[in-house]
Image (cartoon, rainbow, N blue to C red; front, side, top):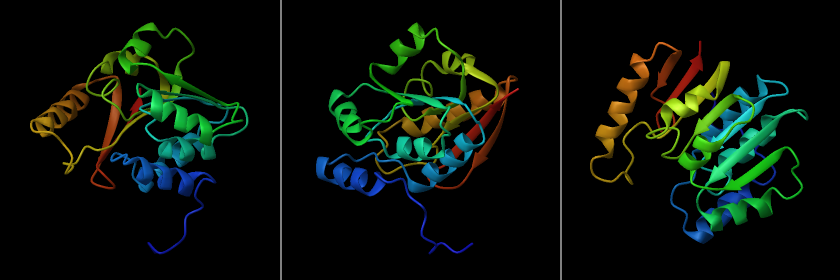
Length: 192
C-alpha cells in the first residue's frame, strides 16, 4: 500500500488540526482511526452513531464525512471549551448533536435509540460504563476504541488498565472482537 497517497480529508480537518496545535490540545485522534471510522460509518446507511469524547473534533469530522444524509450522530465531551470549538467547526451540520456533559452521567440517563456505532474515545464507555455503552449498541453494531497500545502520555498504571480492559472484552460473549496492532492500537467489536 502506498502511504504517500493523499487522503480525501474532511473539509474542516486541517483547520481543526491547526486549532488543536494552537490550543495545545495534546490528545488529537490519529488520522488512521479517522479513516477507519469514516469507512465503518459509511457501512451503516441511515445510521445512528455515538462518539464519547469529542475532543477537538478530528475523529468527528471523519465520521460526519462518512455519514449519509439520513444518518445522525451525538458527540459528547465534558470540556466546555472543546465543545464550543467543535460547534464553530460544525456550525450548520444538522445531523450532529454536540453535548457538553460528563460521559458516564450522559450514558446513565440516555433513553433514546440504540446506536449502530459507538466510538469510545474517553474514559466513560471504555474504562467505566462499559456495560452501559455496549447495552446501547444495536445487534451488528460496531464498538470502536483506540489508544490500546502504550502511549507516551499515559499516566503510571494506565497500561494495566488497558490490559484489563482487553481481558474483559475478550471474555464477553455478546461481542466478537478484533485487536489491531495498527494506528494507536485499535479494538473493533461487533455486537452479536
